[in-house]
Image (cartoon, rainbow, N blue to C red; front, side):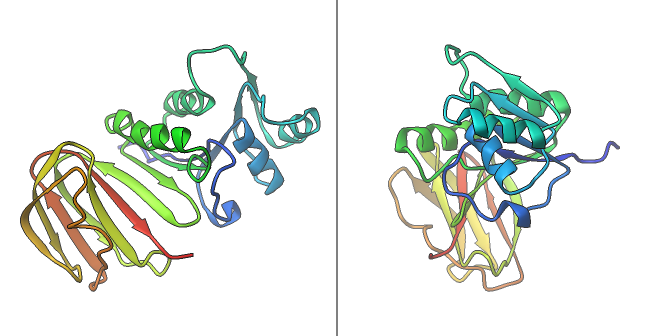
Length: 214
């Protein structure tokens, strides 16, 4: 079995944690995300995008920290984030952590979260991480999550019109075979009371968000 390849992908300059505290086999920076990596002194395998949001001086710095820089025209069908995802596929990524794609413009943030749906069958695991949140999306199945000091709250939202069979064990507010719909708050702001919790559901698409107060 091939070893898993973890890639950290910085897709913008939105809400960023301390990137130096994150560990990945390979880093990819997209546009301003490449500047964020270079500014943190992190070497990246690839910097990609039209770089319309960075200065010439920034681009010089990016070249110093990137093994390869791919410049695209601003007039393109794909966003810089999508380009970075495509190159992560070509590299053979199994797990991808995405940074910098939330906490800025709301239209960009919403479409970036929706991108998790497109990536469900692309990588083994994709997570969006910012200063307060870790966001994942799942198809029906059974999943485990561990208690972390970083995140106090765990919420489950229905990305589809309805999610059925939602069962939570190891949580402060357990559920058994529950249904959740768009706009319902039944499974918001839960907390793990066990070191390891499980969540499962039988139909629909779930967004799982671990979060903390600032």
